[in-house]
Length: 329
Image (cartoon, rainbow, N blue to C red; front, side, top):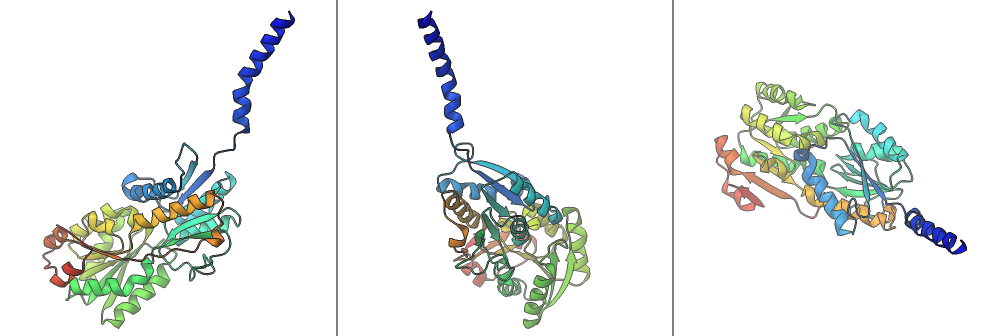
């Protein structure tokens, strides 16, 4: 009887051992994704994939040694503070923000302790996200693609493509909190070149056609697209609307030109997200955001879509073709 009891006890311990071992294993780290847009794969799919690739470069793969918890605002920036608070309560180990400095600010307001990695277009020092680029301080760092700092260059390129465009239409999202300041920058830069800006707003893709028609009625001969996370996420719809109205436009990322837009000038967006993913991985390994400098693009790309130019009846100047990083035939 003693021998049977011993064998029974040993068998029970053996059966319980895997559960005990699992309980002793450290919990898998969780990365929170916070975005002002939607999870539509055609919208931000390539960028999220690049962020995941950056994580993989650092040794982190979802389901293997990390988990992901996502929150999407579907274009309603007013929802971001509550969504950020949800991630903090979850809790997550790191928050990666997608969709500009407005998303990053929502995360920063929600926590002073959980590390945050942003990908934003505005100057993060001017917007108050970090103390400096080299020493961001606090719990936040990231990548800036400097979309707002390229206004003059985009206007110059648009003038070269459409020399007769003395009136430029500015299409913006009325829900963007940076709208007033950046509109002032565009108006000032255009005035310095002898151009006049007329404006129209669209905060959903059902408003694109009406807004662009309004710009045409105001005399716009070309359109400057306000850098906005919602527009980036709905780029195919925006490019299609632009084709229907028949106005040339310059965009802020190459993905617009790849979707059929006339031309784009800006940083490589997927590359920026890959860098952000690598930063998230470094933080998961123990580095502090305060010690990771905000990274800036070292190269800006000019992409021209010749099919779009032909459809608009434009002869692309040879000079622009020569300096373009890519000409889509």
